[in-house]
Image (cartoon, rainbow, N blue to C red):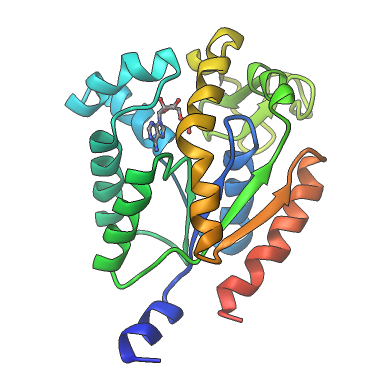
Length: 232
Ligand code: AMP
């Protein structure tokens, strides 16, 4: 192994969570943050923050996001590059919702190479499309801390009050409406699902059946991620 290779292998791991909208990427990424001190980077969250701040990128992205289509590679890659440049990346990175296209996957390799890093592993959350509409249209988050809930699968202990921070403001995403979900699933199958084979060919793909209970999936994921962190 060359010196550069050693540097890559010992750097904080970069993990990609792949899966259609509603697969549980955000929920599981938050679990990994809490468990391992890794940092979740969600391009959806970064874009929503840009929309809220009214930046130029946010203005351009808003209508596309509301329609359920994918925002341009150019905007999304720029937003991720900026975030990586801000540092504060914990003990490793969990990419949630990025890359979503072949061009984004290539850009990610370049961005990481500039930092002496590479994609460590790609975990594909395997779910049934038919169930995703129910999962997505029932979900909401705490406006204060971002903890995720679901009308049927994960209600808070006290209705309307966040288990994690006690906040009482809950919000639902405009693009989580059932009529937008079909567009988002179609975008996933057309643009993102091919990345499964891309990473399989690189020997980086691990499949994780993700139709069970959140805690069971979290336990399996934890067992997959723990060895990556120690480089074993
Ligand atoms: P998410 O929160 O990951 O479900 O993303 C919400 C929306 O943001 C998506 O439906 C897209 O419009 C946009 N978006 C998020 N990440 C990306 C990405 N990597 N590429 C293109 N569009 C994205």
